[in-house]
Image (cartoon, rainbow, N blue to C red):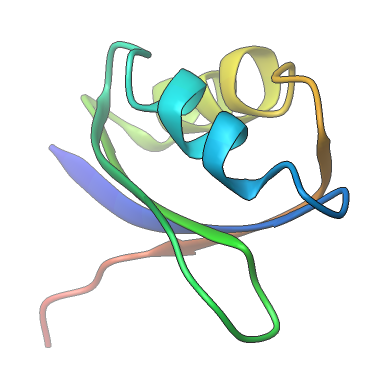
Length: 77
């Protein structure tokens, strides 16, 4: 299982809508709107890195109002 945080920048005023829509996507375990340089932080999981990439590119980035994402895979050191 691969887990990651996806940091999202949105259009002005869209953070709440984006977080609500993303929270319904399979593979997303948490989506919250926050303040700071990013507007929404998502925790996601997938079976492998390729599936995680497809989740981010095909599903999360397809949500209206998103301008940029940064995916941070979780590592256990």
